Length: 169
Ligand SMILES: [Fe+2]
Ligand SMILES: [Fe+2]
Image (cartoon, helix red, strand yellow):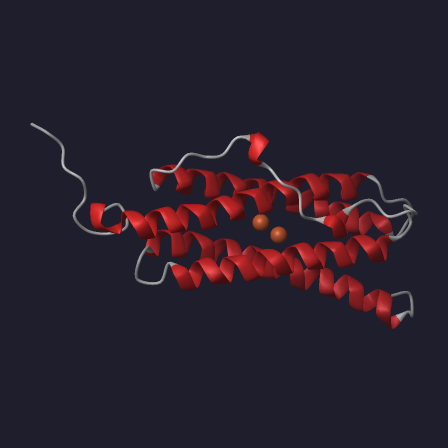
């Protein structure tokens, strides 16, 4: 007996084009998460000073969440008959999360994190729109991830507000 392909849903032959388009969006999300893990490790270790501790602890927690997101994107790429890309395909984009000139410059880190989270929020909203009807499973996954990113952004907005209130940002 030969197996047959699913006749319905994103795995169906007739949806190959949509599926490949979604895989490309997922690859971009995967790389964004991987770069965020790198940047958050960097920026959770470098900062100096008493005030840096809250930011450091917050980023340490986020690193684990972003790593989980990267793994979810990778798994979904494979489920959609894609191939998770190798490291040679990686192209860095987070210019704003490079180490500051002075390691007590926490505002630089906070603003960089907000920028990274904003980029993720924008890309994931796009995936949610693009998978509407076509792929509810990917959409459901990305909605859950989007909630995490909105939470991350909101937390760091609060940190920035505190620095602004004190005239430090
Ligand atoms: Fe993430
Ligand atoms: Fe995040």
